[in-house]
Structures are given as C-alpha cells and as structure tokens.
Image (cartoon, one colour):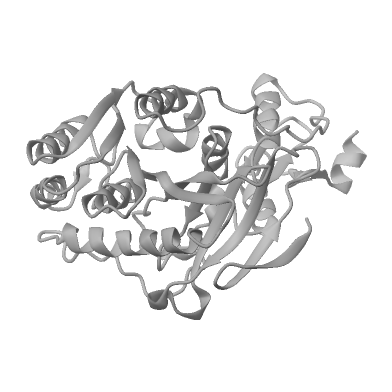
Length: 368
C-alpha cells in the first residue's frame, strides 16, 4: 500500500485504498494533543472519495477488561464500522484515546477503586481526547465540523455521551452502543450506583438527541442496568432514545462489532429523524476478488467472503482438511498471520496462511 506524508498540525500518514475500491479514501493520522506528547493520538479517517467537505462522524472505541492489552488495540478494529458511516456521507474518524494503541500520553481513564468509582472524572478525561480530534479536523477542507455526530461503543459510548454534556460547537447528535464503564466480569460492574449517578450528572447538561442501543444479552451492561442509566439520564433532562435490541450471539456486547447488518437500520432511522447524513447509503467498497481455498465447507466459504470485505491488517489460515480461521483489524500483517494460524491450529495441526491482506500467499498458489 502506498504511503505519503501529509500535514494536519502534525505528521499525517496517508494510505490509498486498494485499487478495487475507488469510492472511499483511507488515511492514518496522528492527532496533536499536548497531554499525548509528541506522538499525539492514533487515528484513522475513512470518507467517500471526492473533495467534500463531509460532516465528521467521530468514532470512539471501548476499553478491555484486561488493561494489559490496551496497547495492542488498533483503529483498524473499527474499520468496517467506519465504512458504514462513510457510506452515509460522513468523514468517519476513529480516534484512539491516551493509553490505547500507539497513542501517546499516560492512560487517563482510571476511575479509582472498584467499590468507590469516580466515573465523572473518567468521562471528562475521555471527552478531552475527543475534543482534541475535533479541533484537528477543523483545519481540513474535506471534513466539516458543523452538524457532526459522535459515535461510541462501550467506554467509547460513555465518552460520547460525556461529550454531549459539554457539547462542542457543531455537535448535532450522539449514538452510543452499549455505553458504560466499569465492567470487570460478566454481569459484574464496579459501583453501579456511581455509574448511574454519573449518567444523571451528564443528563443535567446534555440537550442533544442521543441514541442508546443495548442488546438484551449484553454481559457488560445488562438490560436492567441500561434502563437505570437511561432513566437517570433522561430524568435529569437528557434526551435519549433507548433501543432494547434482541439478543445477539453469546454476548450482545459484540453487537456493534459483529452485528452491522442489524444496527445500521437503527442508525438510519435515527439519522433521518435528525436530518443528518445521506438518505440512501453509498454502495459499499468493492471486495477484493480472490479465489477461496479448496475444500472449505459452507461456513468456511462464508468466512472467506467476510474476510475479503474486512479492513487491514488481516490474514486467513486454512488446513488441507478445511479447518480455517481469519483475523482482521490488527496492528500489522505479521500479527494477523500469527493470530490466524493460532486460531486455525485449535482445529488442525497442519494449518498454513492462505491470504494476507488482499493477496494470496505461496501456500495458496500451491493449494490451487
């Protein structure tokens, strides 16, 4: 993939989209923020082709229960979700907050001991990182910060709601998927009452329309807690439409990452009600045409088709007997290969990498 130097108040890396998908552009950015030091914040911008400007859709990631993996996270993990907002006419910016991925600065979202949490402090720190990203976008001619939206999942949903409580100029609406903080195990949230009170405090000053989506089997923030948070927020004056989505997979907390075909209809209805975004989504980017591995079963062929539409960095591993695994959205192609092989070898010992990003390997040529 070609890379060139850009300037956006700091050094910006730009990457062209693969040749088979000419309708969107993709740029890897470094967002300047004093608290993030010279490295700034890692970010990824995906928007429709053309000069724009396109209204910003600021996308915020979640927080893993295991803090040791924060540094392994990548903006690429939300690539598909960003494409969906680009399809709706937005310049979708995924920003990694301090302490996540390659973003600089110290992790700033510690809420204190589990039994006595200060979630409002975390809310302010998270929102500060989002404000830095918004400020950086103001200098671009292809991104508009008037009538923009904030979108977040889990801790990123909480951060986006916090942003609405002291809304920057131009923010028009917020979409929160499974928003919350403090989940340390399935159906176990640190100091739930403090979390509910934090949503009430945010609701006292938030006046923008917000959409909240929680699956009925969310193991991070279950339906009862979601309703408590929603009631506290709206009872204090906040505007929030809560969707109790149907159970999804083994843990509904993965709805945003794996249930794109489900939540896009919810988002479209909300955006239409706010007169935001395109009425008719643009076509999706064309998937790279690669032949599937031989001897794959029906699930494997579906998995390979899904792999082709995933963003970088990705790999597909397969065994001669048809066992397979795919991994995408990782920090490098090498990491993707390692993880794909690791997943495939749970089912067969003789797995090999068949495809990396958008190209077949020598193993694939031999298999064919």
